[in-house]
Length: 309
Image (cartoon, rainbow, N blue to C red; front, side, top):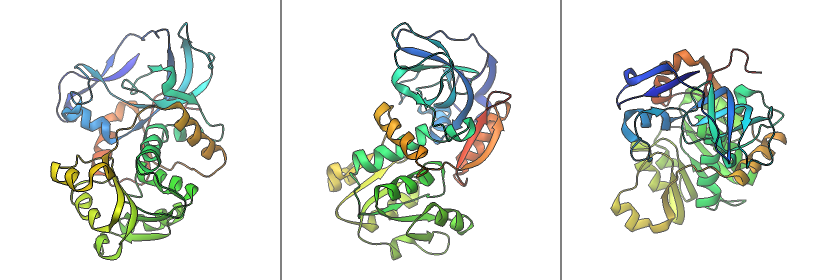
């Protein structure tokens, strides 16, 4: 099978599309024939050197978000059958024709979605869900600021927050303004025309998907006692001392209950993934380049199978 592997850390030149043996599932694992794979910032962060921090050792097979069909079951797997269409977040190895998933890492693919759109949800959706609801405890009627509202995570976060009944303020460039408004934001701020911290105040929750200067400025929008969750930055010691457990860096984890709840919103048409571009596996370097610009509208997806339907 074909798989994307790195043998050292660095830029896109360290990524190689190689021939590898098809892995075999353990007792509580499934072998998935991958149809499509979502591209996420974690992929180029691992490529650039973050693999050690995530507990990975070289060589590393890249890819953490898949949609496909179960090819083989481990001896102790229940709730799935060979031929089931599934999607999920896996630890690694998703940029490949076959991937191993723990049984708790995958769920049945929502019937409303084809494989291309299904690959846009698991990792990004779980990141947004866990940041806003598990960590920040966002509830109906609260005000939330979502930075990078047009991106793969941000665009799902907007819809999830609206489904919860929150008042949503989203930032993005003016180029993506109509798209973000269509997602359902109550307020849109074009960060290229005005400093959002000057017009947004007293929010209950900040969910930052951008980092850098945007992350730093977003603190000015938070009300006393509010929650600040970032998917990209590592808070400083001073920030942690100031905000305590109301400031967190979210690390997406597999959770079958969370994924089932997200799937239910998809099937009830309350969550619609948006695709920025679809590229073949052979163009994985271009896919990571696009992701690293953080200027995409929706999700970048790799098509693994010749027919992803």
